[in-house]
Length: 145
Image (cartoon, rainbow, N blue to C red; front, side):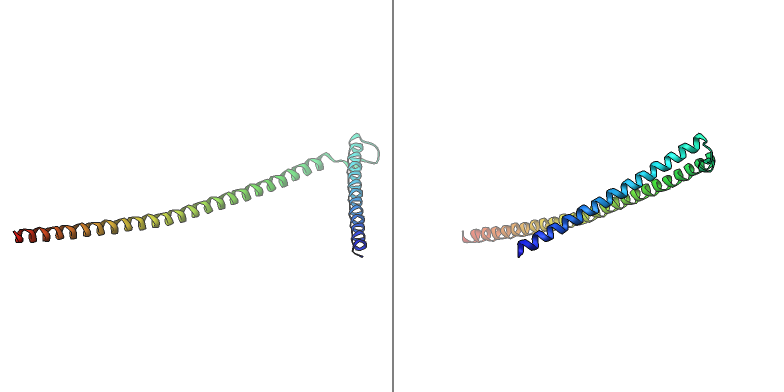
């Protein structure tokens, strides 16, 4: 039962896949044929065959080329602006991260300094206590004599 279900599913998948691919290929062929026909019609119009005068107009072609160039330029400028925005966002993110790391490290250094100060103060206090203890023992020794 499971094998039957698997084989049926596989068959349907393959059938669908190849049908879709065939449709894509047919659409591409039709599109390419239309482009070729349009180019041929323009060439015929340029050569000046009778009945094709309305198909080619040099001024219209020049205007169309200019419009296409303007559109391409606008798209390129938009793309560059988008790239600049992304770069600026990246730079801002890096700067924020650097500021955060700096703040964290300054805190860490301050804690280390505070710990060192406390250790020095404790050592100084211990040294003073030992000194006082030595003086007391020295005074006791002198009294004993």
